[in-house]
Image 1 (tube, rainbow, N blue to C red):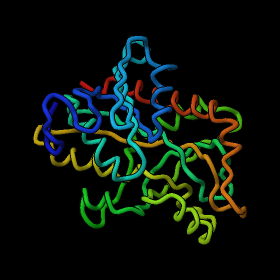
Image 2: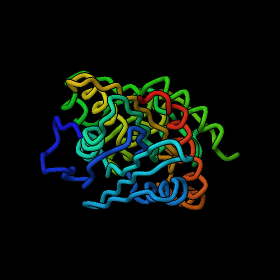
Image 3: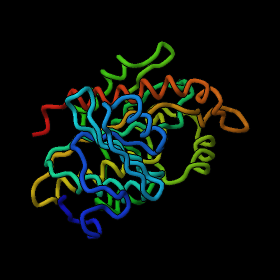
Image 4: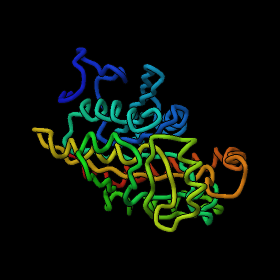
Length: 267
């Protein structure tokens, strides 16, 4: 444990209740997705920590990869609380962090279940600039993103397509969707979610400011759960819900296999 910013409450983290973290990290907003990672994909003997409605799991993937999976909660402020506790719980200088989350499509051509690997983020929230300063650009690590795309193409089902593009991170859900509908479909920023830019900002802050030196990689793979720019009175989630188990399976596998591909990065 290497405290820099987090609260000193002894040998654990205040919000997550953990006292260590593995260097290979899978994260998402939904606690049930994290439980699925543990129950369906990690070797037996995994440990589950539940604190303040947040779920953290420590385990091993395919007998060789030490993985921590955790739920960030929803939105940038929650990421800015939980991710530092993960990073400061890890004693390795090098870490690999992958977010697997859902997103609303901002392009009419995207279908439910499609994957989007975020390249750079249009920041529509204030947390990231509080961390890194005005004018901050949130960019995912290309080397990690390329592997994530490769593994997403391997794990996806026939009805899914994998895209690589800019996405938007917002600190609002319903009103951002309404404004997106008014703006219409976009070609450059093709999806909107709530966590990528603060993940990048926290990564960059620790890479820059940890006195022991951090070399953290971070990337994101989104699955499209709805389309917010289609002409319809309400956002329809029924198609996503009907295929959610398949989408979740492919999503988790893409993330874990990408972490496995970077097993030699951490030393």
